[in-house]
Amino acid sequence: MNFLADDELHGRGSATRDEHIAALFVASQLQALGFKPGGDNDTFIQKSPLPDPLPARTLQRIAAFQNVPRKETWNAIAILRGSTTPNEVILLTAHLDHLGIGPANASGDTNYNGADDDASGTTAVLTLAHILATGPRPRRTIVFALFGSEELGGYGNRAFLAHPPVPLTNIVANLEFEMMGRPDPAVPAGTLWLTGYDRSNLGPELAKHGAHLVNDPHPKQNFFQRSDNYALAQRGIIAQTVSSYGLHKDYHQPSDEIATIDFTHMTNAIASMVDPVRWLANSSWKPEWNPGKKPGPNPATAPQTLSSPQPFQR
Image 1 (tube, one colour):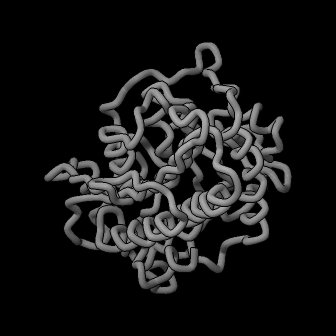
Image 2 (spheres, one colour):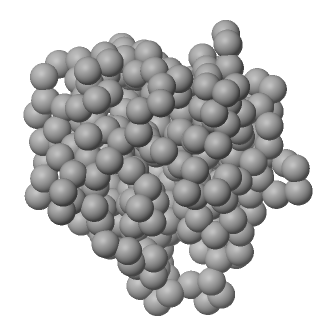
């Protein structure tokens, strides 16, 4: 997390050299664990071109940020092949990019480090990868995917959906990890919330198996539609986001730095998901959408992100 949120990565701006470095770092972590590559040409990196030119709304959103070429984005993907039911897949995801270099705050800081958003989620997925790499292989396959260019409009997840490392129909469930670095005072201490909790039976079932998950306390924010999970959900996959984002003032600001992270909360939050994810990877149970709660297909629409009003409101 120190590496991802360090000033030397200049805020991991979407589709920049620094996002690429972050993706290579994550890929090296996954490769060292002995997983199979899920990227291009038997590597752990999936590269995808961006539209040229980018949509006018996207260009307007990033106009105040560093003017650098944004031609392609990078995902880091690894596969832990299941032992007995490898054609059933659990997908664990987060986004590794942030905003980059932008307008200075009152302290003159121009580096939008993105410690909570989403170095915390990326760290959660990497931690789960380290833990799940030990001991007996799970019955089901687990895919670890860290997406690029979420902040530009979900271009990393679009690349994943266009060229998935496993058939999309094999994905049993997707858990996205987004902004887990600080507790949300709107929920009981020691808990996380799951976006779209009432849309499927995934959250309640994970809670039965020890996950400290409760309903999203911010329904007016429409967070279910504002992370990488939504594009997958629109393709019929049970895909929801684990978070504890409490609408803090450092969101999408240069002040989202490592010093603001509550590491006791974050460590306990990640630890609370280990056994439930391990259970899901070893069970035969499959989640289902609740009646009338399945999102409609709309693959042409760019997903939103856990956004503050400016500059990245979608």
